Length: 102
Length: 392
Image 1 (cartoon, chains in turn blue, yellow):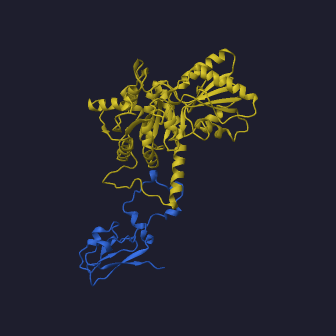
Image 2: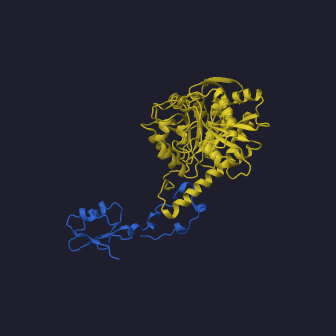
Image 3: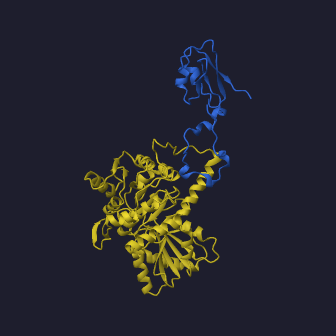
């Protein structure tokens, strides 16, 4: 994932910095908002059981699952909100939701 | 400009103004509480006299939602509604204002249910006071025609970019035939250039509109919106001044009638100002130093014009056509009082509520307000508000 930065962090915007009508003129900058810290559980993949079918990738509502170099589907924890849909849909049951521990 | 007066229903004149403004997209709920405004516009579009997309929808919530889309796509957008229809739009009113979409809407002001009423008062618009739109009031058909054209110019000015609402009293204006001086297409084209959106939904330059604002930025966004609405004030005055030069019909945020040497004044909004003028004439004949203040601009609230117009006044009588139940009573009076609170010298302000749900307010009722207010001068205690013409 290509890293991009906004001109300055959103919590440093003054009211004068707000674009007209709050328009977001730059496409794809939602990736700068890392929503992964919302989760209370994370998916852990047992690659010995994974058949690389990609059903988890298909069902992930946040497009947080990516395919690694070996062809396994894993969650990008910067964006995964821990909803557990991937674990529920996985055909082989290779995904386990594990409590996030601080 | 044409010098010939044309008799037509005020709703039809409003539709003709929208046609002259070359609206490109119109979405509206086509049955009651709708007026003849969009009915006539749909005919103009069907007859090929107006080149616009006309979208009849299943509710006012959808009407304004469609308008949000067409305005975001860069089209000059218009809609119209009334009463319950305005309340059904309520959610989207705030959204299009926050998104700064310069939609123009006529609101034929009517009472809200229950009890079910289709008649005129200001309950509908007062419930939408804080929606972020520029809100203009009109007194007669000519003003409706003029202000509808001016509304597009104001809303779309690059220094403004804010939705704008033209209020006209339901039935007492919307369904009454009046003489109008219309404008030529050449003149309106000269006054109102085509709309050139700063941001528009276009596949060549994708943008996100209506995005999410976290607590870190929401307050700044709201402040920016409030400042923009306040900053529209000089532009509104500039547009009216230019319209005045073109037509000889001049508009001010606060207009006056027989205020020379007035110690007392009535304050009204909308079509009842014409009845109040009659009452002022009658009482002036009896030697009472009375004038009339007509508030045209409701948002942005013209603080300076209001304060200036209080010069020399000992008593101000505000007539409201809506009631804030269980609260301050009259919303207009409440805001006028608040605007004057900081002033060292200010008149005594008396609030009257009249003309709810189509109840007539004849000149005699305005005279009664003045006489009642004069009696209050001597009394220490004053109620939050008084009513006129309500039995018992």
